[in-house]
Image 1: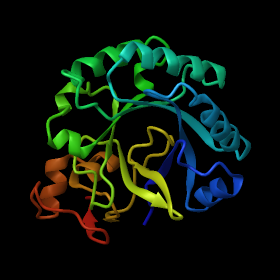
Image 2: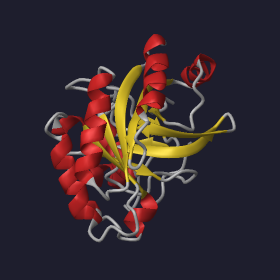
Image 3: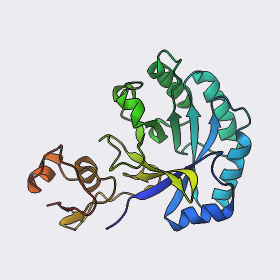
Image 4: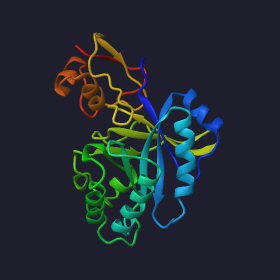
Length: 248
C-alpha cells in the first residue's frame, strides 16, 4: 500500500535544528512549507530564514506560507513579498495562504479575495493554496464557495478519519510530532510534492488514512459513479484504512 506523500508546515514553534529535520525526512517528509510571515509579527523573517536554510541544506523542497488573520490584506501581502524575495523564493514556488480569520473581521471572504489578488501579482494562481481549518468551514466563517476552485485547498482537520471535505487537495492530519507542535499533511494529488498515482495496473486498492471515495476516484482516474457501483457502495459510506477497493 503506497502512502500519500507528506508535507510539513514549519513556523516559530518548530525546532530549528538539523536533527529535527532529519527526523521529518525519516518519516517521508521531503517538502517543507516555511511560514515566511504572520499577521502582527514584524520580525518573523528571522525564523523563516533559519528554517529555509536548514531545509535547503538537507535538499528538501521548500515552499512558502503566509499566516493571516485577514484584518489587513495589503499589509500582509507587502510584508510576505519582502521576505519571499529576500529569502530567494521565486515565481514557480508553491505558496500557502493559511487563514485564521480574526473574529472582528466583518467580511473575511472579501478580505481573502483581496489578499489573493495581491499575492497573485507575484505568485502564479496555479501555485496558490488556501489552507483553512474545517471548523471555520463548518461554522460558515468562510464558505467553500468563497475559495475559487482553481486554487489548491488544504483542510486542517487533525486526528480525524479524513479531511472531511471532498474538494481538499491536501489534508493536515496531525498537529504534533516528537512531542512538538507540528502540522503534518497528506498531499493527495501532488500539489507540493509533484507525486500522484492516477494510473495503475492494479485491479484493487487498499485504502489508507485520509481516503474518501472522491480521493480514490480522482487519484486513479476512475469515474466516481463507476467506482461506487463496482464496490456496491454509496457516496456517503465511509472508507476505512485497510479496506479493499475494486478499481475495475
